[in-house]
Amino acid sequence: MNLLWFTWKDIKNPYAGGAEVVNDELATRLAKEGHEVVFLTRSFAKAEKEEMINGYKVIRVGNYRTVYFEAYKYYKKNLKGWADLVIEEVNTVPFFCNLYVKEKSILFFHQLCREIWFYEMNIIKGLIGYVAETFYLFLLGNRDVITVSESTKKDLNRFGFRRDKIKIISEGTHLDPITDLNIEKFEKPTILSLGALRSMKRADQIIAAFEIAKNKISDLQLIIAGDTTGNFAKKIIGMIAASKHKDSIQCLGKISGEKKIELMQKSHLIAVTSVKEGWGLVVTEANSQGTPAVVYDVDGLRDSVRNGETGIICEKNNPENLSQKIVKILEDKVEYERLRQNAWNWSKEITFEKSYEDFKKAIGLNYE
Image (tube, rainbow, N blue to C red; front, side, top):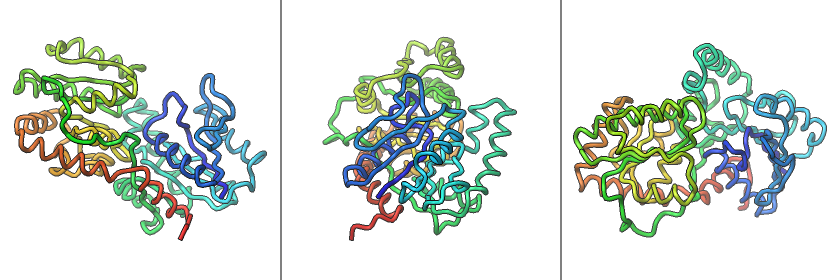
């Protein structure tokens, strides 16, 4: 099968995240099975215009503003009629392939933007984006859809997508679960915040929760790791500098894959307070390394945590409630170990092998 995949970023993009990891894993497996896969995506500084990655081809056109029109032009000139199936991945703004692609197509959503608009933009741009998303979702046509969580499926259903046309595929993680839970943790109880310091990740609320929890657990530590470019990151660095507990907070900036694994293994809890996720991939990754999560009750995170079984979901999305959950888990050693064991066991079921099998069924690849 020839598959043409419209997407906003590829795995080599400096801003690639969890969605790009999923795409790369799926495309790599498709290529290994003999399918031809072409990604049509945006370029970035010093990027090659075309290259092969793990057996699939990446073609880069335009920039983050112009990629949609440039992809349309490139398709019309070079790829029209080539594909057996077109995958249109929607990352904030769709490519509107249904308006010009005649081949069979399927939509792929990791998540909708919704509230994120107001965190990543100023109030005017955020409102424009929020209203525009509401409008353009109805223009995408009644096509088949792939997504990664029940939360996103419910979101899509609110905007007119039929539930019976929405297929959920499993998420996956490229981290192998540790062989057993007998791993060394940090000497002092440590909370981990992991991810780019963007407004929608709300690391400021993790710092606030940490400061409250520190009053109950005096030796509590906080490690913040993730890209520190941008104005919100400056705010976080300023908060740390002004904190009376600044000596107990580390801000490491962007870290290597090896360091990420080390922190996931040695930390006691990971806290995730995003406004919205497709699936809380960082939760599953931390679980696989023996660390349970405390999260806000939002789309994606409520999918990646089974409340009271593999981790804890806050009843209220605020630092006070988050701090209460942190203290409760860390002070109850028996409950902590139960959550840790369950989280680790569940992470073993969330694999890219299962994700790929789900994906093949969703796009109509039948090997029976």
